[in-house]
Image (cartoon, rainbow, N blue to C red; front, side):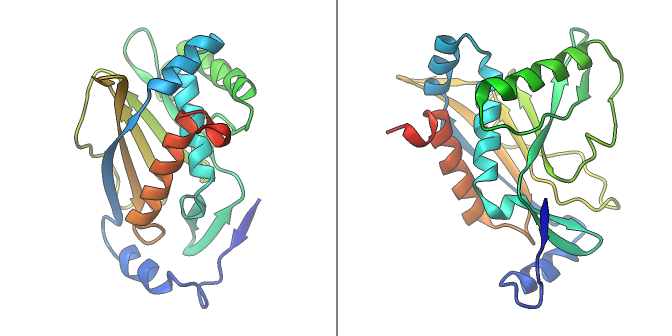
Length: 214
C-alpha cells in the first residue's frame, strides 16, 4: 500500500524540486551505535547477530515516515511498509541480492531471511529480479571486515533512484559497549539530517530491545 503525496501542499515541495535536479541527490552520514545489547539478545535467543540487527534497522526505518518516501515517475509516494533487499554472501566470497519482507516478529522475519540466504548460497551471479528491484525496500549491506568511518556507493546517475542505502561495519569494543559504524545514504529531496537522526535514535532503541527497552 502506498499513498500519493500532494506536492502542491507538501512542505518539502521546493526541497524536492531543488535536489531532484542534481546529478547526485543523495547525501550520506556515518555514525556509531552500540550493538552490545543486540549481541547479548542474539546469543540468548540462539539467533544470528545479523538477523537481530537487520530486523532492528528495518523496524527503525519503518518508524520514520520520510524514509518510506519513494519517487516514481516524478511523483512522490509514501509506502505503508518498507521491506529489505540485503546483499547476502556466499562461501566463494561473491554476493547476491535478496528480498526479505518486513515482519514485526523477529523469528518470523528470520525464517524469510534464512530462506533467502539459502537461495543465495545455491545460486550464482547477482540474482537480479523484480523482487530485488522493488521500490518499497531499503538496500542493506554489511562489511564486518571493516570498521569504516566513511562510505560511498556505486551509483548510476542516469537511473532514477530514491531508495535509502544502509550499511554497517565491524564492531569496535569500547568498555562494555560494542560500537558499530552505520552509513545511511538518502535522497536529500525526501529527507534531511534530522530524519537520519530519527532513524539512528530508533535503530539504537531497537538494538536495545525495542519499545520495552529502558
